[in-house]
Amino acid sequence: MKKLIFILLCALTCATCNNKVAIKTISSNNFNTTDSITGETVISYDAAYPFGCSELEKLKYPKQWDENVYGDETSYDSTILELLKLIECFSIINDVPSIVNDLVITGLAYLTVGNTPTYPTNDNPIYKQDLDSLKYKLPDFGRFNCYYYYQTLTDTYGELGYILLYDKTNQTGTAINVYYNVAGDQHIKSRRFLMDENAIKLYEGYSYDDGTSLYKAFIIKTDTSGEISINTL
Image 1 (cartoon, rainbow, N blue to C red):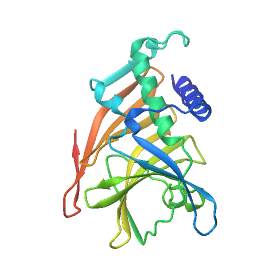
Image 2: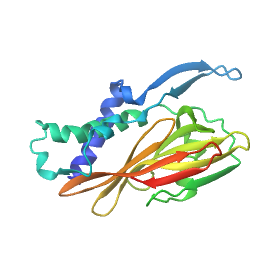
Image 3: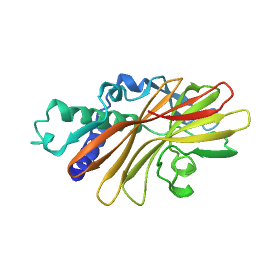
């Protein structure tokens, strides 16, 4: 199954590169602007809420996809199509050109949510400015400006997606890992998300040779003072 998931991820990524599909739950609109200094065209993405994949709310949890539901790869049943929709949804979200990142961040903190994978600073999608991994500007989340970053890891199989809650009054930010696919020795560990202006819902799971699981994990909110809370679902 692990090998098949790798194949599906690659195939769907290639497909979305060649044929963009509008998915309502992404709620994003892209438009071109011109840099007033260089005259170059800049691609900007403003996303609306809900942001993420609403297919997550249609499933009954905990969810388990067994290996035998794959069967013949040319004739998926309705059960495995649920998993394929999730993979495709996030492939489309992440497969957009990056935005020119002009944010000035004087201080950055990382919110620990469960067992969030930790990586060296120089392989983090927010710090690694030379790869320009900013993908979307979102509506405000509470008192914070909100942005979505995405990057693939360079030294191993893995994808990381972060929400940045940015306080423009003091130019500081809080980074929250909301999306990842990270390969271990015998499994793939995953996190998915769906958010609106009031809350970020996180879903986590694993893929082993005998199946793939997904369950509700955390909900993240903020109050008017800027305090961020994490609760288990």
